[in-house]
Image 1: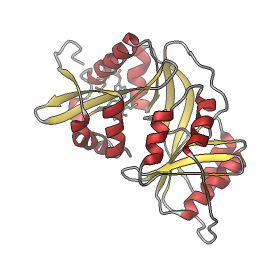
Image 2: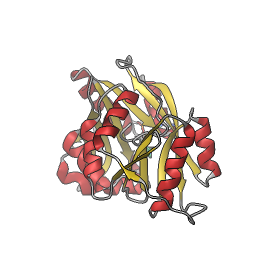
Image 3: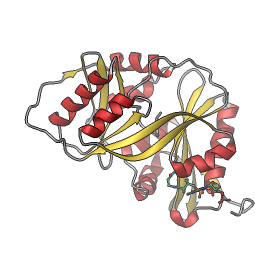
Image 4: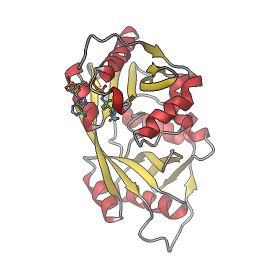
Length: 274
Ligand SMILES: CC(C)(COP(=O)(O)OP(=O)(O)OC[C@H]1O[C@@H](n2cnc3c(N)ncnc32)[C@H](O)[C@@H]1OP(=O)(O)O)[C@@H](O)C(=O)NCCC(=O)NCCS
């Protein structure tokens, strides 16, 4: 690694959405242009350019009560192992410190190798699962639409802080729906390659599984979900229903916890959003 090599980190704007999408698509990630527009409009996004091409990125998204999420840490293969990710995450941490924010992220195994030495410590473990087609599509049943308010309130209880701007924006997208039944509620939204389900809050694993089952029978996939690993009954149920684990994510925090999380979600909003 050339830690002292001069690199010109720049702050990106909404006009960079297409270039940023090329970078995340290259890594096979599911974010679409709407996701990038949200980061670029609502967050602070840093990047590195080589001529006209964006070769690296990272985003800092502020939530409420002094919390923020770092995500979209991407370095194109030919620029890796030159300290770029380290410096981009450092830029996010500096911006967060300036604003008095505790930062969180959900790390891929390669990402965790970068963040550990920077001082991030592990919290929750997640598993990304994918379903191509449900095993049984014979019976579909109607699903009740729920309100953004119901989801925002329950998500706030779980996270310990309010994510109204994010969840309202998700809910307003044309391909999104919020559905609930029997103590469970979730949001389904479009991604680049698959529909994404989450956050998912429920009183019991069987309610969470029943809601997922109803969703996958009622629309066309494929689907992705980021399940909380310690929700073992839920994870086992998904695997029995044909979902495949794609990769682990490790939730990490920089700085002391400033909020008290409430109920444990069954699935999160996505590793890029927490
Ligand atoms: C993970 C990623 C962002 C790292 O970017 P990078 O610019 O190569 O990272 P850095 O050069 O700052 O790495 C700093 C240190 O982290 C560790 N590290 C980085 N990538 C690693 C990997 N793939 N495996 C193991 N350790 C790794 C090394 O200790 C490295 O120091 P070294 O090169 O002196 O050995 C890049 O590989 C990438 O874009 N991967 C695909 C997307 C992804 O997983 N992003 C992370 C999301 S959480």
